[in-house]
Image (tube, rainbow, N blue to C red):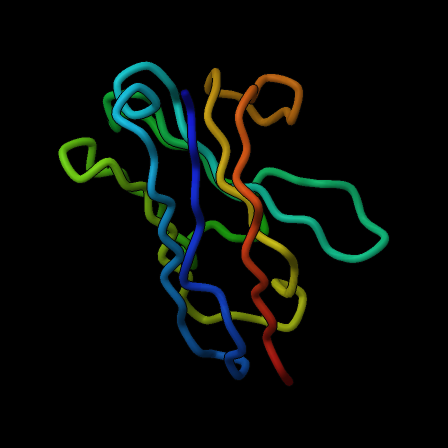
Length: 121
């Protein structure tokens, strides 16, 4: 069974940092690429960052390049998203996902419940 549980969201001021964590089952970390998506009210869900099964390949949305870093620790069954220099436009619910490395929602079969990130100006 694939289970994904996000944590680490919260309220932060512009320019601040947060680290999101996604706890995954052993089966997930040994079989799937992992990703973080986000969805703001009234907007479509969009890719933030994704990482390959081995961790050797990553991809980012242009809006977060040089500010966010995705990483995975397969031994600890955890995927991280380090978010620095946060901006109000980063405010959204952030979702952890497992599937095939891609920018597209449809390529990820498993999803967490999401964690809210709010950046105040």
